[in-house]
Length: 509
Image (cartoon, rainbow, N blue to C red; front, top):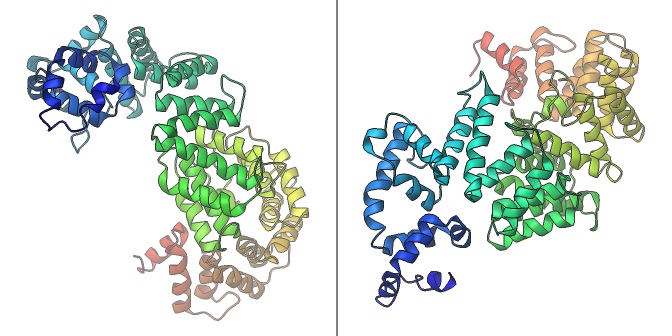
């Protein structure tokens, strides 16, 4: 193989072409029928082989384009014309050989090929159903279609299709169409990883990192990530960088360094596309800015990063974490939330922020079983140690009877401790208590002053309520222009109540 690949580095030279043409049948067979060959060569090299192979040229000029037209008719192409489902060149050829114009109406020809042992067809069918399931085409009976996916993948694996084996492992790992079986998933990943598939090496490293199907071992995880990295796989490198960030943050096996942790998280946040690593790293970058750890403190920047990072896949944003008043978030057990909780637990005994975030997760049921009583215990310990964010949280627990008996006086006491340390959310809550006489005697002048302190730090809740004070002359002279100024400040940060108020006044956008 090395001889063939090295001799096509300069395919335009006269000395190379004859040497390849002499071995056309062997090259053609290798490319079309041996997926293992494609694990050893990159796609550009394979494309060069195909271009210089005379026997492949007519195939590429007729049957492969015909297959692409069929894919387009079945809405399997992206707007840019690329396949929505990744197929290797040999997969496309193996399927294209049996694609005819009159078959464009449905996929029956593809099913027939799968039943006749065409591994590429079986794999392609599995991926088609996977995509359609993800697009909610089959919402009524998802399990039945997961089982269909499983059977197609198993059939392709019988004929040693590597990517089918990779996706079959994913099915066992996530319990799709079958009982969840981490041991079986790890075994399938291991087989592919040992054959040199970078995606499998990363997946197998992930098994070691989480202790799924194998004994947990971070050194083993990094070893497998490094194998993928050595093949030029950027995802493998970023998995290692992500772990290094946590190890630096909590001082596990290396000297504790906020700066190293911040830089590593920043790199993963900006460069990774991994749906688990990227939101977690971005979230932690936000916290580092907010607290001024490893970088210059900028609370507004940190808050914005955390707010903007919130998504359907990672529902831990400003209102759930920093402001601590949105308790309506349903228990979330998706992979990003589970991974986040595991990592915070890893640093529980080493870092106060990890302990605080473990408590947040326990309180909300984010990545773990909801346990508000345990969360309150952790918040209480940290609050007594003087951490303003935990003081705010324990205050909210007393204010809303979350894990403890309701007590507005106790809530106000903790809000005040947080506010006196300059926590803008604590200042906003102290103002709120004064404004409505909750846990303390009503005092609108004092309320306006605390709203101002919060607002001037860029807190959108403090800005909104300070605007309210100016709009109605509560604790300050009535001033519509000043009210609009602060309301816009809040609205520009996406606070919906402020936006709605401006719309009612005809001042938005």
